[in-house]
Length: 479
Image (cartoon, rainbow, N blue to C red; front, top):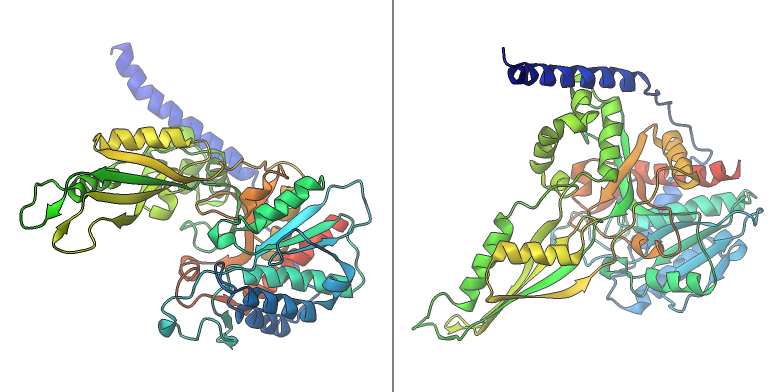
């Protein structure tokens, strides 16, 4: 038998044998997850009332300043320990809230806990089970706009710090609390101004923790342990205008294709295009972690990406959420042409919202769009472009503390994750090398789908877990 035939037979068998041995070895090193520790603070009903009241203030990013002023007054009345024992920092924007909790060891860099006060509008309020800005606690949930994103996180941080202050605890490290005012519209007046304050005063953080991934239930079928996905980077956000100009006129005598038709064909090509996949470090580590806890047949694939890459990428491609973790995505979100049914517009425009992977540049996106469209009549202009996120390390004190707090609070396995959406955390990469994105709650896809949607809510159990998590994180750092 020719040697090439032998190689064609032997190489796949040898590769599979190596993959099997690797899987057995790495799964044998998997440590068991210990049961979660009970919190010393067990009262949650009052915390739920506090969250419910906070939700009642319609702090929409572009809304009235009075809603933020009312929220601030409520927080001052509700958390007297924070407002008397922590230093309130003025950053130049009165809608922001920043506090400094001085620790006992000045040799340690400070750490930062974040959330945002602002919320998105509550459209279609008549379709909500309960009014979106009412003080509603029903069925074991706090209901309303911002209950999950992200006043739940803000209140959980405040509850944890207030209880620790009231019990006479002083942290070893200095902690900052930062609650921005406009995360939902880019954070330019909120997080960005706070970061500028930090730069002016020479403040750098050991680690930063913002909203992000969650403890996911049913993340991958067959994995029996809860998985806590911690964002260590986020995708970019680029808006590109497509424009086509061609003589229009009356619709009774069209000269097809019109500007709108040309642009429509370009959009069809963009949506049809299969953009290349790249499994970066955050997702490679996620696959590895899942593989160590999955049934053997699934572990064989997840722990041996080098051999099963095509199969894994096909799995990712089958689900829009998973697909966004390994590809730059393009979505046409806005279009404009004629404003009358009998007029052919001279100009048609559309906006493409691109969410690039951290390693992909805007120039590369433009080149791919130009190649996909392949029509000189369509002009492209970059309207806005975000700074690319850095990838924070899984080594070091910050991730170790967050992981330990996750394990003690949720009995979950922490792992890395790439955020598909944007957060205020991106701004803080200018003053910190270790920026993490994690919301300490247990969620399934059904609950997550309520975010920015009708009937947003947060369970009392999740609020209790979140308070427990932040309390544990601060106490672990003080041991």
